[in-house]
Amino acid sequence: AEVRVTPQATTVEKIAQQVLFVEAARKRALLGELLSDPAWSRTLVFTRTKRGADRVAEYLEKTGVEAAAIHGDKS
Image 1 (cartoon, rainbow, N blue to C red):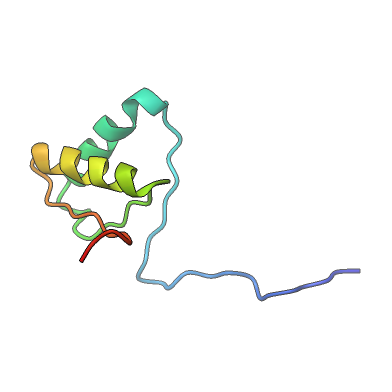
Image 2: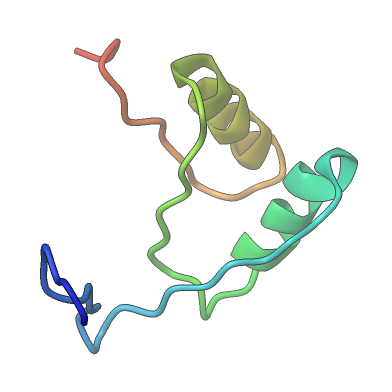
């Protein structure tokens, strides 16, 4: 017997999703490398905390990647 609570999740065809497994110490550097590629023109990066989002955005800005943190502590 198969019980379904919700329909299987699908993504919009125009949205590409990807999961990359990487050592914690290399996360920011890899993110900077990936986002410096012009093919990644619009990207969402999820973090665990608000402060983490601020740190990632700050790091990306320092490496020349335009970035902004979006979370509950923003006006």
